[in-house]
Length: 266
Image (cartoon, rainbow, N blue to C red; front, top):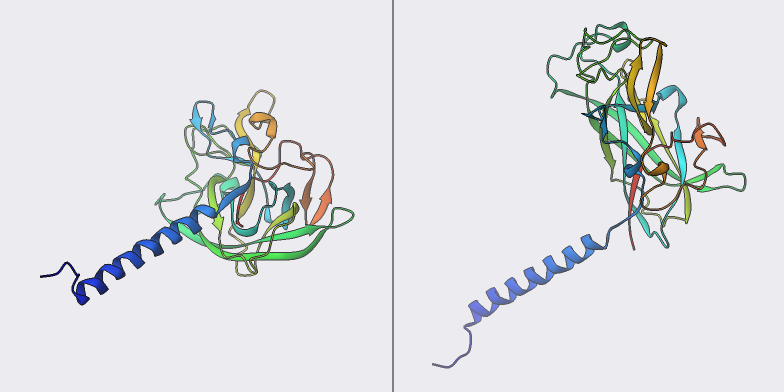
């Protein structure tokens, strides 16, 4: 008997080789995706020895809201965008009336948001958009009001840290069209859509976290951004500026940059 592999086994062997090569190519393609901007490092992960459950955030009546970002060299085509949101929606009741009640903490509601990426115009105005992604997310309700928390102008908070705002969570946009090549600098704006219910409130989170309520002085105390607010990857061309209702506000937003992570492919 010769050492030749029977035809059937040869076909099977070749199929295995093709499958392995395909997996290798797929893995290589996946590994080609890289983070080209990330300022999540600026958001405090622990506040008052508690996990950060709440940041300062921008409400829907100021949408489209966002900021200008500068990517790493030759960023490539947009792949995905991660951001943080604050959910002020209660399963029952209204959070600032101190009657927020969420019976099932794992229960979520659907909320639609749009992320758009623009070129930067001559006067820093958004031009485009060059790519957009409208997606429906499952957002967690704000937890039940903690009756032992101090009363504030926004109502009582939730949890052991008495977080008084929304419930912090992360969402990911991954259906951008077209797969546009990112410019060196871009403007990222987030907005709600007509499909959203008016009674549901989801804000866009920023770097600074909520720390506590000063009962004596009747004021909110903030936990400032980490690392001086400087992104881990990429840069903020205008660290004191932001976009409110799509318009550029040059000052007043230091430490309150929207939080983004952007990935791209070559």
